[in-house]
Length: 321
View 1: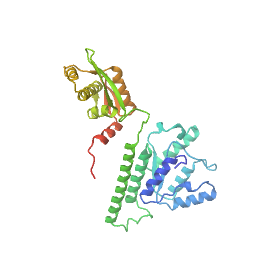
View 2: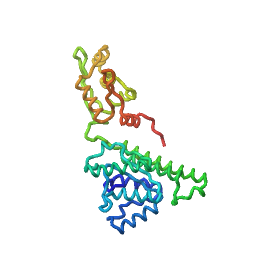
View 3: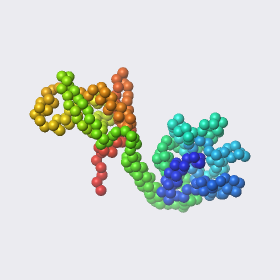
View 4: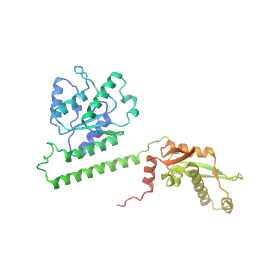
């Protein structure tokens, strides 16, 4: 792993440790010289698997060979027939500038290195650190079962029952990590600068005859009154109509005077202004709760992956302990 991938390195080390394995990262060698490289070779040679993780940079280059230390380590692992598990970014175009190779010559070295790896090994792709952790865990678990090394009992002496038990334990740990990650993602406020959740917002609705009312609600109430409909692609006008009905009913429940009941039960429809409509649409897009789709010159809303996860996290029945 290139030395600039500090967060990714730590996440993978922690994931491997949770599998009761012992990662031997090259960071234990503060400086690479001839003596240190001999130690690195020994560490790689004694390893059961070589995990190669490539981001957007080639890494530090050895002056003598002209290749990166990461590539040199990889070449040595291959020469010793050590199983290689290779991971690379699936969204190279989204790699931040600070983590991407800017030098054209070095970019070409990185490209050739990745091609060489891809010709010999299956690439596992990742976009986020959490995806990387999950992919490393699942790949190692499969390798333990399909290609056990000296750190484990050889396949000729391990019993089928024991193998199944170990795989079951690995699956449990893997599921625990995924659940922990999902809880963390659900608890994080991805866009703290935007109004959302229980933050209050006031809307004004007006009928054709200019009668009107104002009602205070929250962004969550607006989202959940329409989110079930948005699981399927829905015309934006229909979505807003549903929100207008919700706000009208909320106002009726809140105000119990006969005058208000008469106003809201006279068959008139109370509408949001175009500006209010855009306010809701913009907020949902900013929070990445919906995607905007054009179909036959009409605009439609649909829940994004983030929107579906948020809807299910609140709407699904929680397991009782």
